[in-house]
Amino acid sequence: MKVFESWLEGQNLKDHITNPNIEVGDHSYYSGFYHSKSFEDQAVRYLLGDKFTKNAWQSSLYGEVDKLRIGKFCSIASGAIFMMAGNQGHRLDWISTFPFSADIFGEDVQSGFQRAGDTIIGNDVWIGSEAMIMPGVTIGDGAVIGARSVITKNVAPYAIVVGNNHVIKQRFDTPSIETLLTIQWWDWPLEHLKKAMSLLCSGNINGLEHYYVENIKA
Image: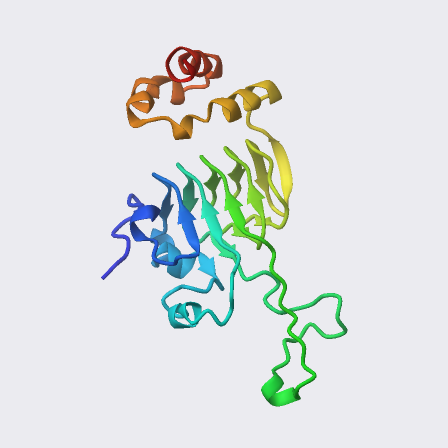
């Protein structure tokens, strides 16, 4: 059975996530037609608790792990990848980066694993096709990540980033970004989102702020 019948379809993530170490907000979706797999099977790498490591996770042998946290209203394109599991046991500051096995190399083997912290994707983030988000990165609200980008550093809210952490520009000026981060439209009740939809589908940030002051903040 196909996961996606056409590129017109998206997978509402909150309805499909099974890994307890993934958290997703309302309305965020994955459009994965061109890679033919579900979000968890294609996009999330090396995260304990998936269908392949469920028993290992439930055994508590590995303790706490870094989580993947995705906000509301995020758009994730086909083939995007979220690399997890910290450094995956490869220490750059040791002579060898190889993850030696104690079964083969003896009792002096040391674990090289280091956590990177949770990977956090804000609200209303658009991640382009085949972009790779590395462990422990935080991407701010409203940011845009270009196709096939490799993101190893935190991304500021409403920044447009391509390639290897290259920031093209901010989507809006600083005062407008501060306004959007204050009103946090993604947390509004559905009834207010419907009433403010003509504003959300425009560049009228002042108008949206006015609606917020008159109807939400009050």
